[in-house]
Amino acid sequence: MASYSYTTAENVQAELRSSTAFGSSTVPSLTQVTNWIQEESAQVNRDAGKVYGSTTYSQDIDYDGSERIQLKNAPIITVNSLVYSTSALGTSTYALSDTKVEDTDYAVYDENGEVMILFGNWSPATGNKRMQINYDAGYNTVPDEITKLATKYVAKRVIDTQLEGDINAKGSGKSISVGSISIVKNSDFGVSQYKELKQDIKDLKQSLVTGFGVHRYTNY
Image (tube, rainbow, N blue to C red; front, side):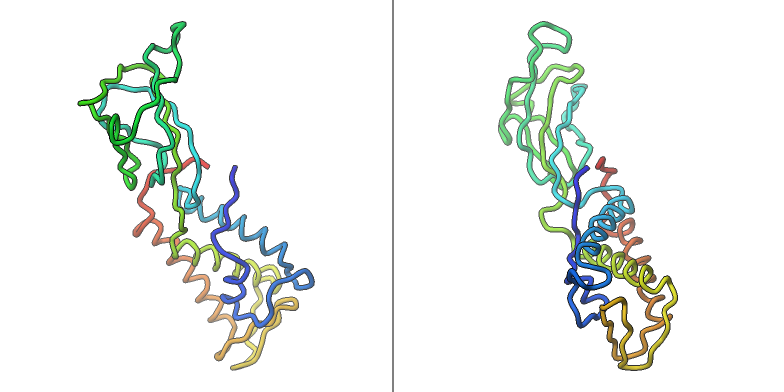
C-alpha cells in the first residue's frame, strides 16, 4: 500500500499557531508528526473512498464489446499503455502484445475515468482479459480541501495526545504549551477553539461527499 502525505509539518504548525517548528527535541517530534501525517492522509482516503495522490494501476479488462470501458479509478492522469490480445484467453497464442495508440485506437476521458474504443480504426474481439490498461489516476496536485482536512486531523491529534482532550483556556493573548510547542492565539484558546477545530473537520469531511468527492471507490 502506497503512503501519501497530504499536508506538511509546517501546515500543522501554522494550524496550531505554534511559534516553534517541530524538530527532534519537540513533543511531539517532527518524526512523530510526519508519521501522523501519513496515517491521517490514509484516513482521508478512507473517508473519501478514493486516493487523492497520484497512483499507478494495471487493470485487466474482460471486454464485452462496449464502446466505453469504465476504469476502477478516477480521475485519470494518463494512460501509459493499452495492450490487447488478438487471441482468446486459454489459447496457445494468447498474449497481451498488441499495443494500441491513444487518439487513434482509443480516446481517454480523464475526469470520468473512461476509455472509449474508436471503432473506426479498431474492432477488438470480446473475451476475458482481452485487454490490459496501465494508467496513473488521482491528482498531481492534491486539492486544497484535502490538504486542509489532513492538516486539521493531525493538529487535533497533537492536541489530543498531549493534553488528553482536556483543553483549558489560558486567557486572551496567552499561550498554551503542547509539549515544547507553544500555541498562541489572540483570543482564548480553549474548549471553543477545540470545538471549532472539530467542526471544521466535520464540514470538510462532508464536502468529500457533497462537493468534489463524487468519484468511484478506489482500491488502495
